[in-house]
Amino acid sequence: QAQEVHAAIREYLKTAVSPKVAEETRIAYGGSVGGKNCKELAQKPDVDGFLVGGASLKPEFLDIVSATQ
Image (tube, rainbow, N blue to C red):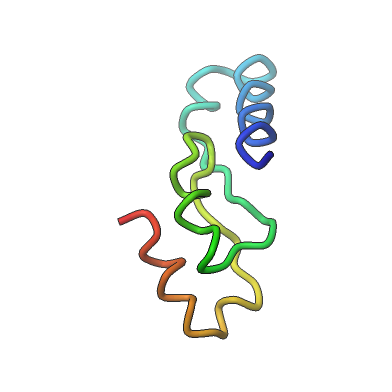
């Protein structure tokens, strides 16, 4: 579901502003992210990063940080 929403945001930017802005805008995922779902989310083409909340205080934060590597 995250990919669909991010793609819709990017499409809106493309039509409302410009294709260049849509391509260059980084869209961060603000939902629940943790060690269990970070790798899957990081592979989505329109998810450019995460807004990490409580998980940043747990050891699994290292998994989130390295999810894109």
